[in-house]
Length: 66
Image (cartoon, rainbow, N blue to C red):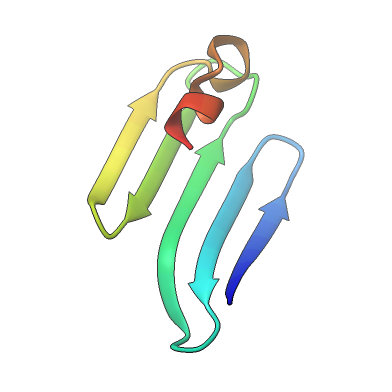
């Protein structure tokens, strides 16, 4: 079973997807400065790390990244 952990703030969102059997982190991500100029999305999975900079809330970048 996989567990999704989410931590939301006023302008940020962090998440981790964890395999509960092995306790291994499958994926994790961070979206900072949501709706603010200079926002940034970082996403890491088994495929490596991806980063995107822009205005996340206005461009829909968070949806595309996930």
